[in-house]
Amino acid sequence: VIITVGPDSDAACVRQELVHRGLWVRRFDGADVVRFVVEPHSARVGREELLRIPGVADVSVPKSTTPLLDGHPPVVRVRGLDIGVGAAPILMAGPCSVESEERILALAGQAAAAGASFLRGGAFKPRTSCYDFQGLGEQALGWMRRAADAHGLRVITEALEPGEVPVVAAHTDVLQIGARNMHSARLLRAAGATGLVVMLKRGMAATIEEWTAAAETLLVHGARGVIFCERGVRSFDPATRFTVDLGAVALIAHVLQLPVIVDPSHGAGRRDLVPALCRAGIAAGASGVMVEVHDAPGEALSDGPQAITPAVLASLGNELFSVRQPTTRDCRPSLTIGSRVS
Ligand code: PEP
Ligand code: MN
Image 1 (tube, rainbow, N blue to C red):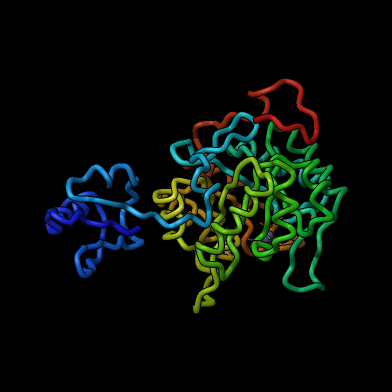
Image 2: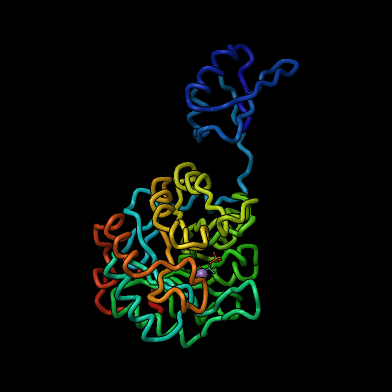
């Protein structure tokens, strides 16, 4: 943003007014005009307000590269539940992978009892090694949908490629884009075209600019809303699997005023750090947390070391989500698979 001072005005007074509003500015003296360039870490002040400052002749705002995201509301509603800035934090819980019908049903019951409003679980798994468990596909989606419905939970699950999007969309309430696919433009287009709310995980080496640009792609192609998910970025230190970037969480929540979820399970890669990072994420402004849970983490087909047990989930839920979240049972009586209630 560039602010031009009027020819007969006192630039020092204008500067004082700008600083008073939380702007950091650099002064450039031209031949017959003074301009202030606003630094990016400044408070967000609207053009109209700046134009009202005595002595300001013009304010030029560069064209935004994310116009739809700029107009995105701070809260999205998914089947009667508000998620976002100012809404009560939500809990998304479930296994890394959907492993069997019985197990996902039991975990759904435990998630609901702990105050979760979403059941998570992978049917199509993005694995670093092609020799690792790849998920049970469509049948797992059906088990998950039925388990969630049986316990009044919403579903969040991931599609890995555009061809999978329709079947995933038919079973889920929020479509998840994983960290490894944040840059996948074709997948973002297909996900957006479902018209669903999409949770966009941050790529493990993605800047906020790249992350928000990916969110814009979803919105341009028709996504009803976007929820960001900070799941840790690659850092220099292998002591934790990734580094949960709480600065990014605070920035998205407090500066951009957009919904952001923290995933400490993938972020830390170890279950003993999950409760502390849930607390930290919410303190930083997160609209909720997503955690991996398994009744026998040692036997889990994927990500066992970072799965908390149902008992830990229950105490976490009690501590952070003691107010029971409204569930799908509280909104509409007859929901069919894939129905969209906003
Ligand atoms: C997941 O949430 O199932 C997952 C694979 O996470 P990420 O994309 O953050 O690695
Ligand atoms: Mn996982």
